[in-house]
Amino acid sequence: MNNLHLFELINAPPGLGPGRLWLAVVLARWLIIVVPIGMALAWVRGDSAARRELLEMLLATVAALAAAQVISHVWPQPRPFALHLGTQYIAHSADPGLPSDHVTVLWSLALAALSTRRFAVWGFTLLATGLAVGWSRVYLGVHFPFDILAALPVAALGALVARTLRHHAYPAMDRMLRLYDRWADAARSWWTAARKT
Image (tube, rainbow, N blue to C red):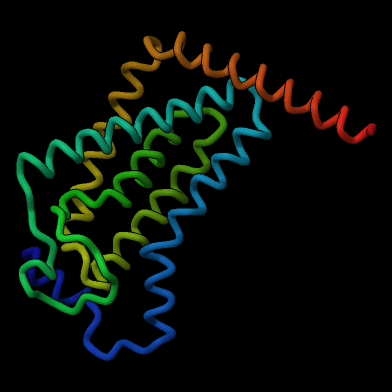
């Protein structure tokens, strides 16, 4: 089954109902916002070891996105609407679509999380979230299915790079964590003093 045939099977037909359109747009555009919110909460509530693991997950994402940029420049693949294929329901620039940045972010975080002690449980949820986001972006006409599938090896590469470089990155991570601790202590002191006045 080729990319175009899969796209035709998944892409929503013209005249999509408002309920289905709303749900698909929430998945395609807004579901990813839950991830940085969850990571921010985990950062604030976690200890230094948890924060280091979150930084490793972010390193995997940065590495995966860098690889995705290289791929899109070396082998640019047009999006369906650029080829006048299917039905497009959300506006999007006509930049190359392979691999999907949204799914690359979610799956690189997922694969990196699986190798941590504290956030491994996030891994399968993030993989499922990436699948839902990817499906919705094909459904709404801004990606081909292979754009979504290509995100998996790119995400795996990002996770592998982060795992390989983590010991080299520890000194920089420790400096960031010390800086955060100083900032957080100063903020707490200011808040305590402000409440007393």
